[in-house]
Amino acid sequence: MKNEPTTSLFELVTGLSEAVDLVSPVLVNHHKMVAYFSLCLGSELGLSIENTSQTVLAGALHDIGALSISERLEALDFEVEHAHQHAETAYHLLKGFPPFSKIAEFIRFHHVWWNWGEGRQFRGQEVPLESHILHLADRISVLINKEHQVLSQVDNIKKHIEGQSQRMFNPDIVGAFNSLAGKEFFWLDAVSNSISSILSNRIKIKTIQLDLDAIINLADIFSQIIDFRCQFTANHSSGVAVCAERLAQLAAFSEHDCKMMRVAGYLHDLGKLAVPVDILNKPSGLSDEEFQIIKSHTYYTYRILEKICGFEKINSWASFHHECLDGGGYPFHLGEPDLSMGSRIMAAADVFTAIMEDRPYRAGMDEGSALRVLQKMVDNNKLDAGVVTLLKCNFEEINRYRLSAQEVSGNRYHRIVGQSEHPDY
Ligand SMILES: [Fe+2]
Ligand SMILES: [Fe+2]
Ligand SMILES: [Fe+2]
Image 1 (cartoon, rainbow, N blue to C red):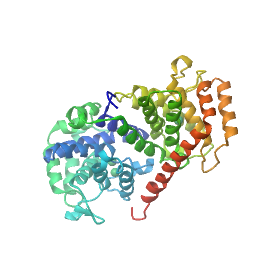
Image 2: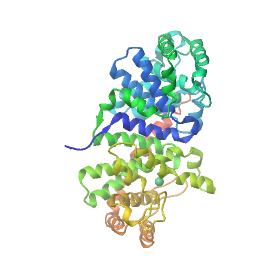
Image 3: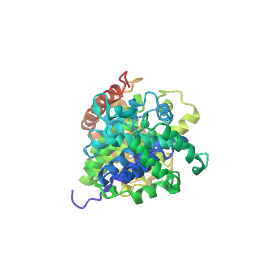
Image 4: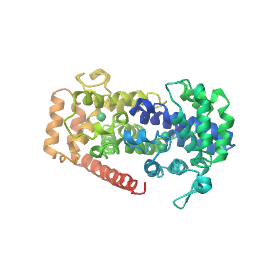
């Protein structure tokens, strides 16, 4: 479509990957730090701008396949056991998105040891140099103790890395690290609170723009990262996305806005990345504290998406899905005057999808019961009457869209999560 605003690939990736690091305070900025070290190492080694840029994006996404917090925290040990599982999961999540085909390869092998040159290959596959750069960038990052002044740690970190040259790391990359490690800025940038703007100022690819169709594909990948952490809701966002998009079409939104609605649907639960998996996977019996933690997810969706330029509308549609017309929702307690038609559509699509989908511990509702629940929410001034009428009048069609989208993502869940659970990983 002509004249549509586009979004920077770099900004979108770093924004979304920030969400993945919210799950634990020790992980804050981990992805950005690895992206930063990858950038420095790639430039020092004289990689092309294109390849350095791809390595930086790979750094910003490298651990997205670690779906549980224990996997994320285990990856912080210097010599990680079972590390290839999350790398393989990330590979399968990303490889279908054409701009990420190289990035997926780099990430797939980011825990392969150099092993005196044997690490040029892994399980019969060529391991790109960029994977070895990522490996070292990642390990430098885990060696930094955020509690202490970074410059006082440099000698120890250098000793550690040099001691692993040839065994864990490619010696050429260790050489590049050694030249960088003598410069204070290298370390101070990495732990700076302004790491986002430092990265953004230095990176050359920020000019790569994504059009709306590519953003839909990327948001779809992120919906899997969000949903695949929880077996009960492994295909929830895909259902919400198509229902919301169809409702937007029925409400005569422009073609462009209908696509934006699809993106908002994929990302509406983005903030769930900040919720530990064991809480998400509890079918019932949540303590009050656990319930409050879950409730915070739309707040995080909002705070992450507000940083992405051009996502203002998407943000308000995605993040207000637990707000209610009577002002009794959360986290902003918005009321009728503040809730746009798009936000009202998302709220209804979310409830509709949630009550209709089968969960392992209960079957989805039938049409009659679902309509009664939705009508009650209209009567109690929670959901918009007009949107629910649209849903009622097109129930069968919208439900068909939901079912086929959820079937596709359910199959992907079994393929991707099942695949990476290979006993060798
Ligand atoms: Fe990793
Ligand atoms: Fe990592
Ligand atoms: Fe939600």
